Amino acid sequence: MAELRTLVQKVRSKNAGPFWLTIDIFCGDAERYADVIKRLKTDAVSRLFQSNSQTLKRFDIADLHVIKFSLPRPAIQGDIHDRDMHGASWAALLAELDI
Image (tube, rainbow, N blue to C red; front, top):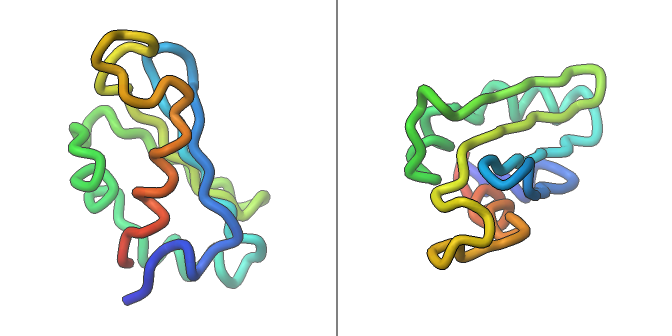
């Protein structure tokens, strides 16, 4: 097992509107992309973010060597309970996931 960040070029997260977050995993090349695709399980990501696996969306984009996750924000952007207005901290959590 290894932390995701040691296997890829970059993990980035951002807003996808006031209700959704998006997290991109840039693998860099086809070999690393294939390795990460095999190792990274959607259920593990769902548990990490305490998100319902039915609402977590995964997109494997082979031509770009990118894996993308979209999930509902736990609080609407700008709400008093929103702890990350720009959605930037979610990438750090995923980057540390052992796969």
